[in-house]
Length: 300
Image 1 (cartoon, rainbow, N blue to C red):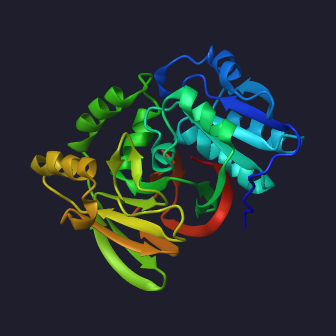
Image 2 (image 1 turned 90 degrees about the vertical axis):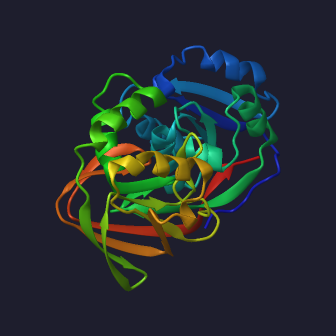
């Protein structure tokens, strides 16, 4: 259980871990920008750039064992996942500068995309405790899942063109050949069999870019939303997109949402999954759990 903290007595050691390629833009001047607006009377700041997948997590782990109290993930949901996993492990405080292309978790937490405003939020230093989750013992904070979106993440990770436009173009290309699977689910002890285009396990409400898969999900409710996208004819793809952009998935006949704390899923074959947007390979058996109010985050 995390403990909220609001008072300051001495300067706080803070480390900014910056992903230089998140969101498809260079970040080399970010430290100077942060230094310009960060409250020096509250914080002793250090900056470091991640260099490869997994490096942000290594840097956060090292920082947490030293004297850093706050570790800031400056990047997208994948960078946040790496950093937050170590912050959670070491009972530190997470900060977020949303520099990715989707920024799903940051949008849910209402952390401003404007970098100056996001730094101002860190200066205010108000924290709150949020739920975290695990997906086959791999931590996630926003969304994890399998099916088409996981397949697309795996293909997209091999594409050199980052950003939303590249993702959308690739999605249109891949959707025509993707075949739904049948899944056996057990949600808090209740069994379901579902054929699905994709299944997302949502801790917060959206993929990013205000595309909502679970409009009523919350990182404060101690529950995960199991979002089952049903098979559909390709002609209805724009309808699905419209539903997600409008945030009406709860009332759509294309999506079924079941809330739970402990989810077991068995799928037809091993393959791609995604954890906070980052592609991984897992077997046929998937287990997801929620850990209520376990992570301390700087919030508005």
